[in-house]
Image: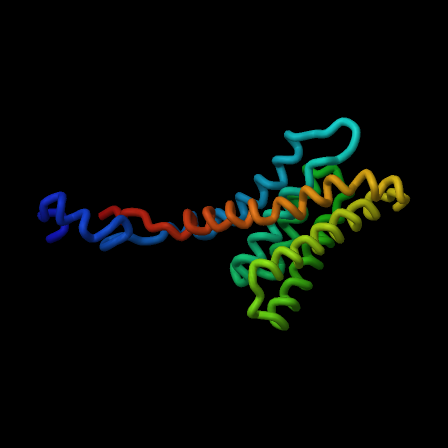
Length: 186
């Protein structure tokens, strides 16, 4: 009550987040899932004619959220998010469900074994995960893994690994947005 009666110069002294503010539970719970699903939809808009160049952005977003906020996504979240990705990626239905669930289990094991990881270890782990994911996705489609196919996939693999820091920065911004406080009504 005193805050409303104070002059505007004193009201600004409390800062942006200050008194009578609360996090939005809807935003705190939905931002990771919505961003992962939008990442799964984005390659649908960016199609390549000759060879796949755009990496699986939904998987990369999923991986970054899991690496940056280990306890945020439950262990079972790989199945529904993978099912959504299967609907739009063109992969056989069930391949992303399996691969995203295995990713969650492996990252959980890594998290319990090495809880003190840093950015470089996360980048290495994510790079290894994305390379294995793309190769496993090729196997799931029934493609024969020849040297020509692997050479054609190199630009996609390199781009996916190099996009990790950019996605990590974007997820950090989304996480700040997710946890930002809004003015309480009433």
